[in-house]
Structures are given as structure tokens and as C-alpha cells.
Amino acid sequence: GAVVSQHPSRVICKSGTSVKIECRSLDFQATTMFWYRQFPKKSLMLMATSNEGSKATYEQGVEKDKFLINHASLTLSTLTVTSAHPEDSSFYICSARDWERGGSYEQYFGPGTRLTVT
Amino acid sequence: GENVEQHPSTLSVQEGDSAVIKCTYSDSASNYFPWYKQELGKRPQLIIDIRSNVGEKKDQRIAVTLNKTAKHFSLHITETQPEDSAVYFCAATGGYQKVTFGIGTKLQVIP
Image (cartoon, rainbow over all chains, first blue to last red; front, side, top):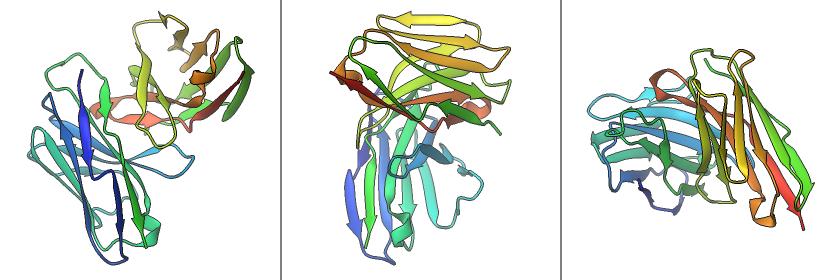
């Protein structure tokens, strides 16, 4: 089946530093990847849609200068949280759609990254 | 944009009983409705999905129904087992493959 990995799984950083999270589709090509944020006991909130070779599309209220998204290849998208603050602490999950399964709407989720900003 | 409402937010059932979770959506253009199960600290796992041209779909103990006219869809789990305990999310997929999630239902199956 389609596998999506994320790295790191957990990261603790100091306030003011930047953190990069990688999302990879391991056995398929993904022209589109999605980044979500999930607070404890809450639902997944879409942050942005990452398109290979073009700029990401951000949801309303998400600061594009703070959450930098790069989708440089068909198998890799990165999310960089710049100048992180404690309120950025959250569970970040990416997902990808299998481009070759044109009729499939299914999205495959990564395992998530737990970010803690101290 | 799409708005997905889900209820109940918590649900407790006795082992062996059925559980039903209901969702409504607002965007008539949405055409794909997946259901996810998420265990604590883990990724959401797709358990069943339905497309807008289908009214009902079943996979063993799990079934989903869709009423496109009323814009609501439901998840039915029969013969519940303790391992069914988790948070369940409904979702609606519309334009640009954008997925909007419901708030989630925490299901507890009591042995």
C-alpha cells in the first residue's frame, strides 16, 4: 500500500529557533501533499496544500511567513516552523494523494510530528 | 468553504452493541466522504469511504450511508469490540481535493 513517512517524529526546540519537518511518500509520487495541525483532543486543521513545483496554498489564518512549505520533488514536502514559540507546540501531520491513482481520492497520512517549543 | 459537523462528540457503548456516528456537510460539490480512526498519538487510519454516487457501503462490521440530498452521512459499527475504542473522524472532500474534517467522536466500548 501507499506509505507516507515523516521526520522527525518528535522534536523539542527552544523558543525563537526554526524547525523543519519532512514528509515523504515512499512508494508513490505525490503531486499534492497536505499539512495539518492537531491540538490535543481536537480535530485536524488543514494548514496548507503543498503542490510540487509551485507555491503552497495556505488556509485562512495560517501565516505563510511563519510556516514555510516547500515541495521540491514528487516525493518530498517540507514544513519549516520559523521563529517557533510555545503556542506553536502541536502535532503536525502531513498527507499525500497517490497521483497515479487518478480516480482515487484517498489520502495517506504520515505518522505525525510532535513539536514542543520550550 | 466546506463545513462538516459531527456528533456525538463522545459515545460509550457496551461491547457487542452498535455505534452510530453522524455527520453533515455544507458544500454540495463535495463528492468523497472518508471515515478515519485515530488512536492516541497515531496517524488517522482510513476505515471506510464512500463516493457521492453511492448510497451505502459495507465492510464487515462497518457500514457507511450517504444521503446526498440531505447532505448527511453516517458511520455504523456493529458488534463493537474493545479494540474499536478510538476517536473517529468523518471528512468531506470537495474542490482541489481539500479535506475538511469533523470534530471527532471519542468512542469507548465497555467490555
